[in-house]
Length: 253
Image 1: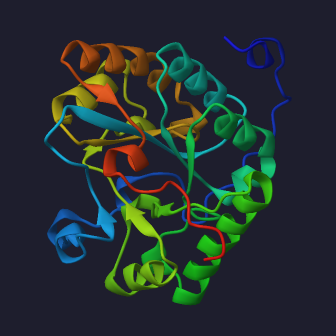
Image 2: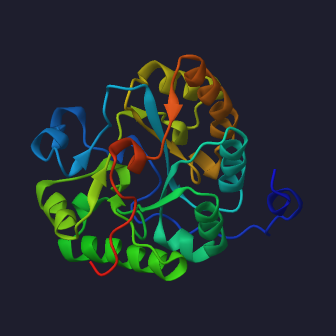
Image 3: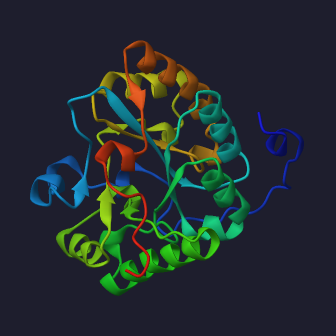
């Protein structure tokens, strides 16, 4: 394990609140209003990858931070897995060295908005600013501009989708939801992932946040999720590898 994370602990900071609150079911579209956006925009809204091989992608939302992010990185290092980290701009601003560390370790960095608003509750102008500000901040630190955008709460409408497409970005959703942010036990998180995973799955987990800002059960569940899927013949890839798409936008776009 990297000594940087074992021996040094940053003093606690005030975590910036998300614009429309933490992850919660009330911010997600109710089932009666569910729309299959992937079916309407198959090339732009991504739920999963190809099903012809037993490969899945781990994706993590809502960080970085200085507590749970290092622990998740250590687990991924132990099992030699590269993942997708969907980052919130204001948390990158607070922990830029964690962004650099994730990138240095070979993980892909993607855009999860600046302050985690529900994009169906803000203007299109603000939505665009949320994405562009985060992209610019990531590019300033790492020299790369994300290609994928994951909407907070998975909240979308047709106007938001068209706005994101105009930015030449892909919208990254998921087909396996761990619900790890909800204060579930380790076994519940494991069951949520393992019962839903299939070839091509994009698995949603978190690397900051969670109920009371704790992801202890995510950290505890992750090793068994990885070991179990590998025993069942699965391999792991980044979303970009799974979809055979670039992780970052070409320079000059």
